[in-house]
Length: 472
Image (cartoon, rainbow, N blue to C red; front, side, top):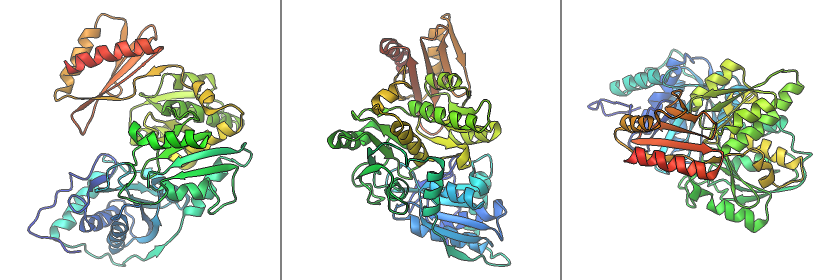
């Protein structure tokens, strides 16, 4: 490790609340990564233990994985390099092998970015509240002195492939062998699901399932030549929507760059909302848990999912727990409540059987199973879980976000509306006709609005009224 000793390193630009993200060659470099690997071992007290390190298809990921491994080994950890992996492959390996680990990915961010997601043994997440800031501080110390002191015994670095174990484990959780034949278009967006889909849903490693997979952009390419690997943006779903209709497919699946999120398209090319997917998977997990003797299985959902989610959970015999937005809150609540499943409006899906971690592939398998065990099309199945009308998330660039929320609160004052502040401000009409949430971004000058109502006219009226107040 060599650094410019005239420079004082400050890594706050790349250390976020839950992970590390930066611009390659600027706020994240091999030298920085090596120091972070050493700091990870120190802060998590991993000397003499196994540390798992892998990365996605971004050009810088292999170099960064090796630098992190070198820093970790210097401080006495034994490193297993996992090579190319999705984020949920790291969670699988961390859980199955009971080892701490790191994966190099910037998820859906553009090509010039890379980052690090770190986990304790058992796929327990690390956030700013549970060690990430300490790792930052220790890494800055090493960078500022220009070297990483060697531990008493340098750790060993080996190589391990976890793809087959990951695929077999997921197939053990959802058995698709009895499904009716389905034609499935998968848009990997040149991300890691281009590797994991053939392994889990195809026959690259395991026996063939009754699925006809139509691949779209399976070539691993961190420059994202076809479209950004961010299915949350509607324009990035257009190729998948067209391909589903063109091939007469039963379903379309879109994954983000590191394959921990999954979006679903029906046979008409229309999106099925993540809230509907949350309710659909929740029903399956409640049924399975109750069959195993769990009287009232708990399901976690964040406050921006449809009101239909808790209604359907309780109707199916489960207990719904509402939480803030964000994976660290969901995972903590999953563990605290012993929840069997959790879902977010952003298409992150969490499973107790997956060490409370999120996995887009397992969610996709549940949807395929739900579709494949009945004869109707996905559009009809999806309608069961989407009785309300939603605006989707609308961002307004506002400098004084608090004043904008105050304007809305004052305008609705005197109406029969309940306001709670679990995450931002949620306004709920007493007659149940609508609710909306205003939530300030922590990192950008955005105020985010989500509206849901019993019908489109009411949703549009409330949406337009709130936006006029926010932007006025």
